[in-house]
Length: 231
Image (cartoon, rainbow, N blue to C red; front, side, top):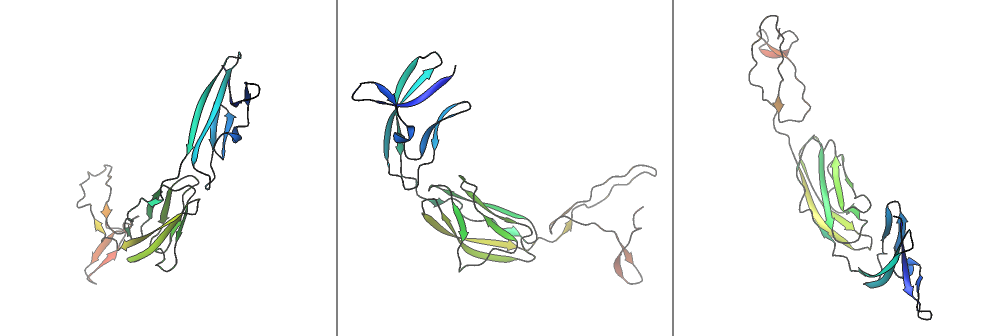
């Protein structure tokens, strides 16, 4: 059955309950809104709102006129202190894609993430992205990270909607890739006229890998690229 919600207040003169504007009895920034699927109290209190408990009365009425009332309270509290949750950044590998989340807690969204001047820049091709509206997780990401090992130490500042901020120093180490190793150690035989399939595997280095065939040149005493060393 359709249900209607209304904020009401007892009129001292008549002794009757009368509708009132929800914004006059709810905490600042909140409203009683009817949407598809029901009625909701929603909104966003201003960052400089006064703390306190807001008391109000809601009246609900169904489609045949039956109604009832209930008393409610919403407490507008001081937000928790802004803290940096991420203790450190994982290392990267030169030439490989990098992505690391940086999370904060407390404070009042939305958050602004910025790297302060005076420290090292981020490794080449990496960028800092702040959280989406209402979220608390930013990201450092990019590709490629570098062509050689490097280390970057910088200070990250996070500022919330009230202007409160917190600074934390991070170090992002980028290591040289491990040597490329062919991990396929042997190839099975194949019958003449039969179908042959074997996956070649490698590890280390920076993927993707390129496999090429080489043959030993006894005249030059060197390995040389060849196209006819396999059947």
